[in-house]
Length: 426
Image 1 (cartoon, rainbow, N blue to C red):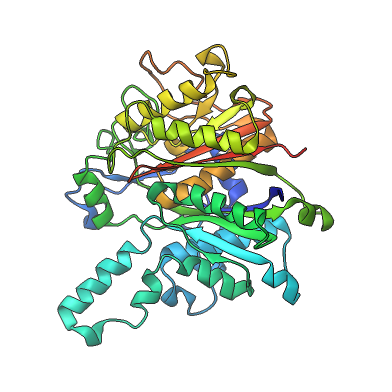
Image 2 (cartoon, rainbow, N blue to C red; image 1 turned 120 degrees about the vertical axis):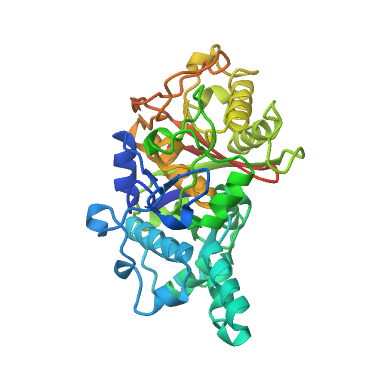
């Protein structure tokens, strides 16, 4: 089977605009979660914290759409599409891939999804219709709303004529996009795929909706950087975040032939369903376990060869516990490690919040960086644990560790699960 490698990465995150800047700030222990208490549109919503994209110039790690978009694009594109455009541009530059021939364009595709898409447009255009009738509804409503338009705009901007695909599987979207894109390369539909997820969900309607589900953190509204606490005894819900992550996936021999720098090989991709509940995983973490197990089977890797797991862990009471059970079952089972303390896992969501449909892509970037640089990102705010959390969760500070294989997990409402296995290239 054709082998798939990562040759480029781009990101827009609450830590910074730029994959390298985001990674550096993550390793240094920075947090991108902020208070929204001074924004009147969020008044009355129980959760008053969010992980938003910092404004400014890209040179300083900030977001300025004029740096990434042509004149008039912002009017035509929803914000999640704009983030995807920027992340894709950075990833392409990082990979050094600037196809010009017809053959190269036909062999380059895009697979980028979103969990929610443009909720802001749905809200605003619904108000326009109710207040002014159909003549007040913009003709751009549908093109801004559609989730596949992130991928579509990228193909149009760069002339890519390979697969044009989008995924929407809630919080597993980014990981599923990467995994699905790898299979397009495996089966010969493309030589290069831009893959990932994007989300721009910080809106009163989304925060109110998740608050009604009692999913969001409300315990640290006055101390936002302490609000997302994966694996911690006092975790009380996730913090909503926004952003985008895009990886350039490439067939190995194609990458070698053009002298591309290779970050890692995408060895395995596992999928599963909880078949349990629309929002809550089973306590055993059975679906998560199956996704990880299948990723390792696909990769031909034994559990004890996995040196690090970037967990989905969102800082919810049930979700973190279920994933912890699944990880220990996988890593301490047959052919695994001897003690829980040998299992190394961390969650990036203490630093960036939960990016919903973009989470899996951004966290895959962090996992690949950890593999490449021998640095494991910390789990922020992990100050106390209960007895069942006895692995090494990289608390508070990054750790140096040379690893050959990593897993990156993403799970979504509806019981949909994905796990990606990356290894150093051999």
